[in-house]
Image (cartoon, rainbow, N blue to C red; front, side, top):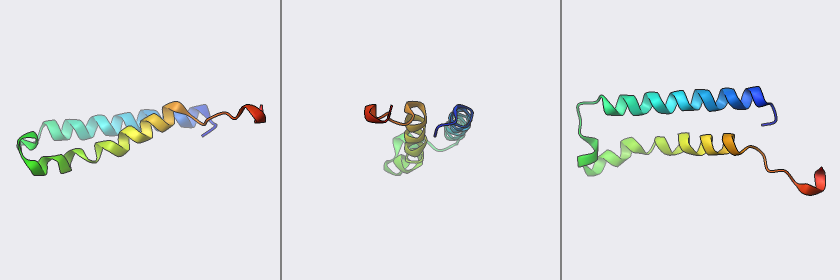
Length: 66
């Protein structure tokens, strides 16, 4: 993603989505960390983290193309 505005927008929206999902998990009545099925509720956090890492890191620059 070469546009810095679009990249920052992606980072902001992804961070808001992750924060809202974690807030939703924290306010549930279930105790998800005390059950073996609770890990299924935590799996959607993984794509949020990968998108944040990819957007934050940016595109790799090849030294031959400069």
